[in-house]
Amino acid sequence: MNLPANFPLKKVMITVVSVVIVIALIITGVTVAVNGKAANATVDVEQVSNISTQYWGDQSSTYGNATSDFVQELYPDKEKAISKIFVKEGDTVKIGDTLLQYDTTKLQLKVESKELEEKKKKYELEQAEKELTKLQNTAPYVEPVIPEPEPEPTPTPVPESQAELYTEITEHSKPFKGAGTEEDPYVFLCTEDAVLTKGFLLKLLGVTDPRATPTPTPTPTPSAEPTAQPSEVPTAAPQPTVTPEPTAKPTTAPTEAPTPAPIEPTEAPTVSGMAWFKQMTFTKTNETGGESVPTPEPDFTLPDGPFVARFEVHEQDNENLPLVKGWQMDGDKISAGFFNEVISEPDDIQMPDLSNADPGISYDTGGSMYTAEELQQMIADKKQQIQDLKLNVKQAAHDLEKAKLDLENATIKSTVNGVVKSLTDLDTAMSTSSPFLVVSGGDGFYITASLNESLLGKVHVGDTVMASSWENGQMYEAEIVQISDFPNDNSNYYYDGSSNPNSSTYQFTARIADADGLKNGMGLDITLKAASDNASNAIYLFKAYIRSDDGGKYVLKVGDDNRVHKTYIKTGKTIYNQYLEIKSDTLTEEDYVAFPYGTSAIDGAKANGTEENTDENGGIDARGLDA
Image 1 (cartoon, rainbow, N blue to C red):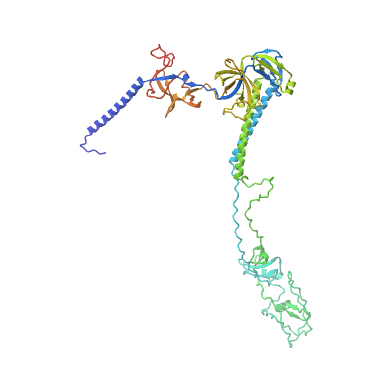
Image 2 (cartoon, helix red, strand yellow):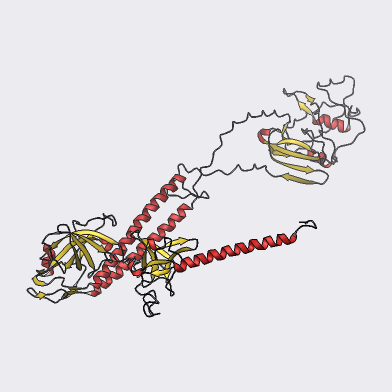
């Protein structure tokens, strides 16, 4: 930008510097004000242990009854062999006393068998999933579009043959086209078994018959009518009969010439040479066997060669139809060229007709043999099979877990304080479906209830359950002392929506230590805590103490300076819809955090509500630790 020479540049510089100074003062003032506000602000804090909880697994609900006379009954099990019984009828036992010992060898084999069964089910599931992927990636068979048949064209009429068909080709055979040259040879229409006569071959090669006497006199053309014999011409002397040259295959039988009447030898013939030869050759005998009359000469004779001739065989002996075979002869080169048979090109390859095919035979059409509908049905069936296999895998895992529990519980201990009421042999108990060992207890109260099979392996003997009375509204704590090895015939399990209602249930017994207010047969609601695979000592902080910004989720944590500072954390799952898992190590149960909302909830605010204060309590910091 060009400024005029007299522009007050000094005033502009002063204005810019003034604006910068004002902005700096504003920023400084705001910073000081904020820091002053933070320095003077005080925010209440809470210890993390007071606003957090721990997660030990899901809860499941059931119901049962309180009883004051609990009986422990042991039934025979075909899959278990008893190695030793430690009590006898009438013995007094306490909770935890050993009653009997099962043979662990058979139980160990059962565990191994269940492990193999689980692996088998998992393999079947993997294979089914692979087959499903293959089906999903298979392109369906598409029926080829069959075009509508075109109307057959009106056949073009074939002209009638104008050429003469030969079975024997002589020097008088007339070609139907050609000039006899190599470029345009004579073409004869003939049959496949046609023959060539000697006379034709002499013409083809351009060779003169050595027996023929040349004469300069032109050969007279015989007329159709026989010439009358001259009355005044002296009869010629008897001449020997001249036999014409034989052909390869004569078209007509040779006619025997009659012996002429004796004439004076001094008389000369009226014709001589080739003319006489032709006259003698084309003389026929009357059908009545009388006097011979000369046959008219043919109207065509091939010229003297050499020339080129081609012999063709056509369909239906018609030169206008396709050629079947042929051959060619060149009289100048004394060679023959043969044509191959004409072979028509094959039609387009057609798809095999599978409408009536044998279903046991596989036909390869180059792609999938399944239509889109068939593939869709197969995919649906495979998905259903996978669902069934997943259930089988879960059942196999459950059976394996139960087998392991049987192995772990091979030593059976008393679950009640009482007396061995009865002890019978296994065969009798098996035949009567009755317990072989019964321990009757008379002290305290017990809870008898059922749990879902999905909780086997998650709920154990020794676990604590909570029970609430329907009548007095009191809460009772009970310890599980027994879980049955056999499913219930008629389930009394209360379904709370978290388990499968169609699965089996198992009876368990829990002992109530403090049974004040309980009555025999009183109904109880029972809550079981099932140990989760993800159960840990992680902190689950109350969600109200967690806030987020562009940097992520954070808490206002008390630092060493007894002031709260923004501390970013990593979070996990939510439980009970109120607590959020803290996955980072930046927060412990001993730390203090502030409620992150409100005018005083700012970074740097002084913490209020700790057990001790740093400056006022002899070297104890804001978290209650030594400074």
